[in-house]
Amino acid sequence: MTADDLLQHLANAYFKVLSSTDWTDPVVVSGLREGLNKFLSNAHLALFKGENKYHKTHWTSQGALEQLERRDHRDLVWEHLVPKTRYIQGPCERSARQGTLTPEFIEELLEKYWHLATITKQEDRTLHPLQMPNEWDMENIRARYEAVGIKLIPNPFFTKLCEPRRRPGT
Image (cartoon, rainbow, N blue to C red):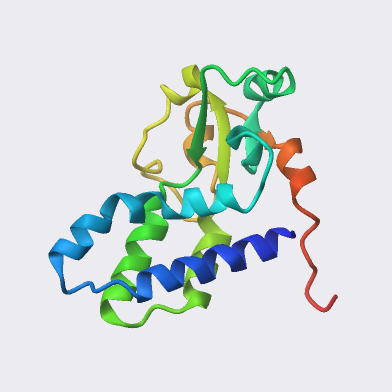
């Protein structure tokens, strides 16, 4: 599966869930809330069989990578580079409520902001959990990590799970 295929699968599945939800019924929305909050993460993990969730992130810190190589998953954290609720889930749910949601809109947000990292619990304690830095340019997805000195590198385990992205025109 390529990274493009992954995003398309996630976008289409998320579209099905959000577009079939009765957003006018507060009991339905409340009952679904936890599932909606975890949907993208659980769907992402379901697309890759056989590996631990920490191997299925796009990025990792050096310390976390050393643990992954030893298959030591203690005190590792599976994190979103960009807070998912604010930059993906919120806009998608608002669009769904308005009846304007499309799979393409979801895929654009996923392409831009759906980036996951495996870091150590100690590193995670230094991150602001819910927001990007005030001076964030809406482009540098690693800004929250850079602000506290966490250097991220591509996760080689995830790279092995994904085929290279298709280039336009190929």
